[in-house]
Length: 388
Length: 248
Image (cartoon, rainbow over all chains, first blue to last red; front, top):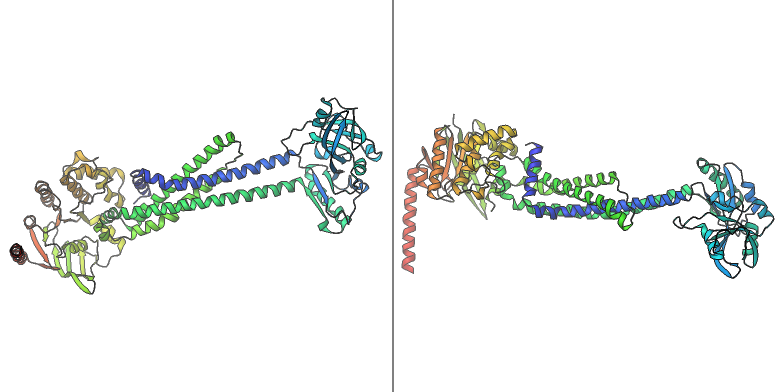
């Protein structure tokens, strides 16, 4: 018998019991739908995270000193790193939350003690005035650069360069205003005030450098710069456990890894429902075989071989599962393109996953169809004919 | 050469501890273009004989030669091919597939044979003309009368141009008029040169055949013996009823 005939026969058998076929397929539909949708959600969040981190700039290297008690980093250590190897700018960062005053207005903001170059490393723009300079740091000038929210809250306007504010009782003059960043990229500079590192050390009563930032001469030299910084830190601390040098790319990679693992896990859980759907197919096929015992007998009497009967039932199972798989993929596609944007969930459906899900449903059809099909093919024609 | 030659065919069944002979060293032959009836009461072993002749079942002992081929030793797959090409079955219960139309039912053996769609259509149309059902091609079995269903079944048996048409009680489920039609179809087919083996318990129908064999307790005997046995059985039955009446 030709394969095409067997497929036509399977369609006829399925069409003659549509409700049952639909219910059987439902398991596969739900299985494929949940696998593709969950993986799409996982991949959607990977893309989202990657986008956000990339928006922060990929040429940022963070160095952490984990052993502040044993190893002291000084400002001049960092200055010696500037221009070394692929390292371009280096800037320490210490922060503290403090209350700012201008006249009668007060506002609690994060005060950042840093040096020149910090704005370059982090990619912060200055819309008015200037950033902190080397001479501000060395001369301990009482100058600051404020974010837009700080300006709005304290002065109700943004033309603030030259104004004076009090930070922790000391008077600072504003020399610059950061560009507005908005809040969608995580921590925003809008609510911060930057002051020279040396002043911050005194003001915060904290002289230890626990974190500093650096960048490379270009994106392509980041790895090289990381090596230079690692060598420096190893030399300084003498122990690999005492420091951590992380580039944004590394962060990106580990974030992507986490969310990939997550989407795999979700997909795996959903795959269980696909398996349950497969068992549903087997169940119905077994019922169908015993219901159609007489039919099998008749077919055998008029010349169907065992392989013909086997093929008929296996193809029926495959048609059911592939059809279910297709409907599932279609529904998944629908929810990715139509539902997801409306409820604000990022979903990225890849054709690869859809193809794999379909392949998996064919596999399920074969796997769970073959036992009932073998059972049908083994029926003896006389027993099958006698069956009422 | 005989179309069918059975030599010492034996089939046993175990019923609990007892072994029952469904067929006990049956030997018989059917010549090409013959119309033979095998008659016997239920339980006589005629269904078993039919299953063996129809290659649906294998004998425990003996040799069966169909169209020059020793069937008793063939594997499952070969038997299926043999059933498909050499034997046309007509059953008491018609055994049509309820979800297929008359046309599709008749077409089925050709599908298993791997015949192309165009020639299938031609062959089915031709055979449906022979049984006079050209107007009913698209009907499902449940939209046809019993006689029409049986004629569809005959068409299905004929469509592969088999060497042998094997009919098991073909009129058993029909009223006398439809039964008559079916028997007329068989006579017509016989005249056209088909070999027909008819299995029945009805003597009147069996008598229409060219030759009649009877089967009793798994043994094929000559018809006269069978007739006398049946008369004997009938007498016993009537006297039994009498007793019951008296007892009541």
